[in-house]
Image (tube, rainbow over all chains, first blue to last red; front, side, top):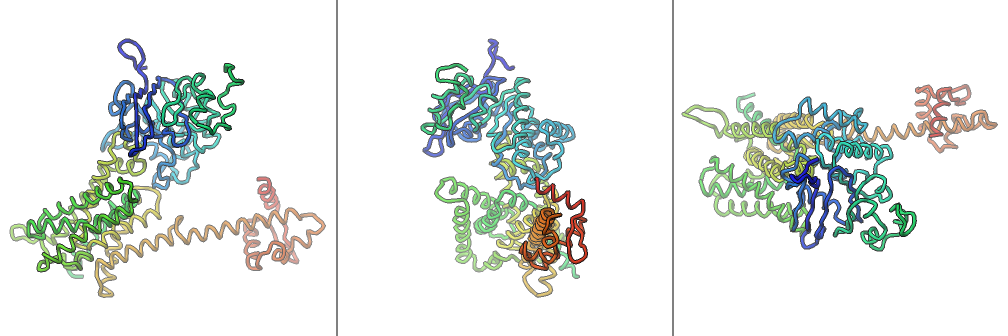
Length: 261
Length: 370
């Protein structure tokens, strides 16, 4: 764990007063968020809440209107090597003429820098990552022949070979089969066990409590953030999701109003 | 074959391959139309630079034209970013504007020089060998062959050196950016390459046919393979074939060589889309026909299984009965039965009665519970 000179651990990600706007339309309003090292954090919120934009703003993929983001106490551009990014599965063209192994190898490109090509060592790492997600038999497969869950596992393998300590994942559980969901959860726990930080944009409210340690409830503004027990409450969900709450019954895991978990 | 023919064909092949290489990434990046825009708007750069230096062979023309190509891309993107028009509309607005200014300038001020509208549109590959490169009185061959060869080498080198950067930024621009490979830098570098290539090819094949040579071979190659390196090599090979075949076709019917090269590229694409092993139209039709037969076969076996041993088995499981009950034409019924027979799933008994083999019975049960 990276610590300050005082001995206090540096936050994995520190977002201060972040505002992002597309044209005049603010997508994120004055966000403050601290993500501790070594925890699994879910970013939760309704459609259009700015969840993906928050991830992209941390990665400097969208311009900030205001605010500051630090990764391990540094600006993102100085901490690139520490961060792995799993975009939404639907954001790429799976008809692209390439193989599963080749996509995983792309995870090593950042560390290789310009011009240098992946070699035998990178290839071995990519195969190991594929084994971790149970996709080693598909290494030579054309990527368009994969199911949605298999595609997601390939993306996860690609993140693993980035050898990062912070993993930003945009909806890794979106539309995957039960087997893939289990594989992803296992990998997330393994990452946490070795002290890595994982931030997932997450849609399925009923699994937040089971999979994650901390949660950030987002709806253009930050509604609440912190340990799941404290932040993932009905009142906060009601605030985040507005009036559309009937489906929220019971998802927070509280037995009765006022009762503890 | 005269030396002139050899030189023309050599130039044709070099032009076609040089165009096809960046074409692969144009197609993969869904920027095919951008090649059309660039190949037209570079004319403005050529014309303006010509007014400056008064020499059609001056290297400044290539530089100015390339710059115009990149400016075109920037203008299209700026217009698109205003969110007032879609990208295709932005392309359609920008390049005709630049092209029309160039055409007006030529018509008004350059009527006496060799820069006419026909040549701009179709190129003059047949005349290219007459413009020689001479150094110290030595004839080194056609000038445009040298220029195009240099561009071909540049394209091969750029693709080889920046292979992984081009690949990752094309497949997943977000990841590329997060890793620190500036997609904008790669994009404009690549578009610069496309522009240089279009400028070089312009002289030989004109501004419209450049597009055919850039897009048709890679589009055909993409139908034939699902590996990027194979796609690149195949694009080059198909382009070279189109060039040579185009030359001889033009010779046979006494027509424009450039036009016939582009037409050949189109024929190659047509052949690919019809006959590609997996993605072709014919393969698709055959696959669907096979699926239909397979499904009918399964249906037949389930039908036989259901009535097996029943009181009406003698009637139901009768060849002639299938037409009536399953509503199959006699011909289709015969084909389905023959297929099942060949696969050892059923046998025909005397009197046209059909009987499942043990294998067929097992298969039918398996299909039913699935």
